[in-house]
Image 1 (tube, rainbow, N blue to C red):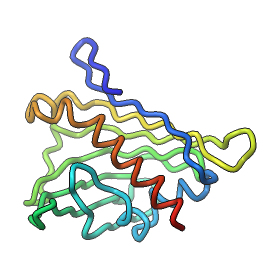
Image 2 (cartoon, rainbow, N blue to C red; image 1 turned 90 degrees about the vertical axis):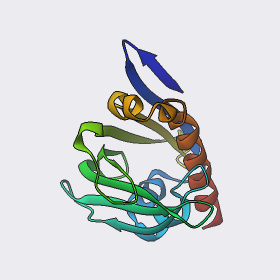
Image 3 (tube, one colour; image 1 turned 180 degrees about the vertical axis):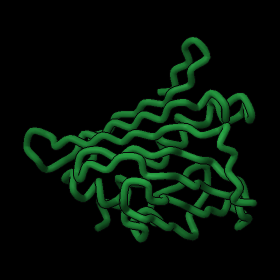
Image 4 (cartoon, helix red, strand yellow; image 1 turned 60 degrees about the horizontal axis):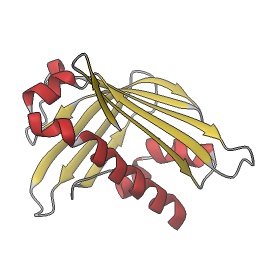
Length: 161
């Protein structure tokens, strides 16, 4: 759900994923797995690079349904708590791969085992989206469905493993 209060733009999604926290955590940090699920609105990752450490890079390159370069993301890993939490400085970038720091946002993914330990309660919070939403107004209503689509693809990818 995207909430907008006092001009703040925040996406918050909760999902129970039928895989243990370790598998879900790895699905966010293993480039081969990220490439299988990450993308929404018809975009498909063509390349993923992840330097798995605090301060490391988390980058994706994407193409649209027509095969054209749509850019991707140039993110920095701010926090890593194995099997529990990932925090990224999120940077949108266009085909030129030149992200504008004025549009930086923050993505927090929190994982908790379900009581039986066979699944994971995932909470995704994407915040500080005001600048990019102001620069590209169409994005304001696109964040929430894009994350919903991406998480659907994550569930499908983990189910297929």
